[in-house]
Amino acid sequence: MKHARIRYQGQVHDARVTGPNTLQLEDGRTLAEDQVQWLPPATGTLFALGLNYADHATELAFTPPTEPLVFIKSPGTYTGHNQVTWRPDNVAYMHYECELVAVIGKTARNVKREDALDYLAGYTLCNDYAIRDYLENYYRPNLRVKNRDATTPVGPWIIDAAEVPEPNKLTLRTWVNGELRQQGSTADMIFDIPYLIEYLSSFMTLQPGDMIATGTPEGLSDVVPGDEVVVEIEGVGRLVNRIVSESEFFAHHAQPEPTTAAKEHA
Image 1: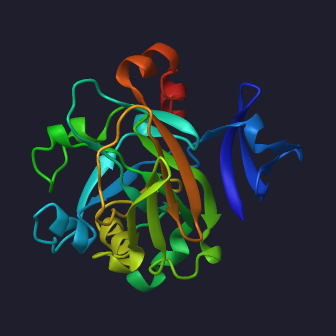
Image 2: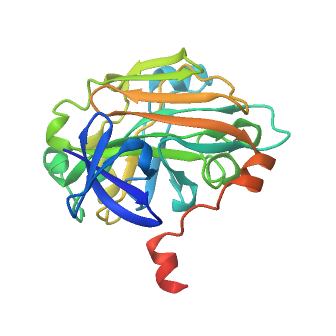
């Protein structure tokens, strides 16, 4: 089953995907895809992996890491399927990153590798855009590279973990304006999902709705305003995003939706 979060008639709803272009709300109403605004399907903390594919590390002239290189993205960076992302004015290089995302389904602490997949709600995907101009150290991406508002499309949905029996054998692809730019396989991850759940939960508690973005393979290229970027992972989903300029984004598009915690403290 595929689970989505959408906005319909000004209200946020949980929905399940019932067909290629249809969703059903919890009250039974059926909606067409073009009637709703897709939101990120999870809103917990996103733990992102740097250099988790050996070919990508080589592409950037780095030795593959021997321990996971993890950084955190704030919920304000998330945006949904069929939404826009902005390219900052006066930067030289902004690139996409197609990534498989594991979504935590229950509280996880000191989880063993052999039990790790039991803690998943399912999988989604993200496009973890990066502004390479500000990259000070590939091993520790700084905030200006990875934590800009609405620059991490996530979605369209969470697919149940049981429907993806071999997450380590999935093809990843990225198209820019219909041209295939990136292709790889999750089989080439250095640290797979069970390892990452064991690693992270060994020193912190993972909560339902938290996400682990597992890195991207080689094949990066610059994107500019006007580009349509599509990332797809076999058996998981297809996520569409369009690039606009900084001035267009802040003139015509709303700020990111407040997180639940922000709303409670408002």
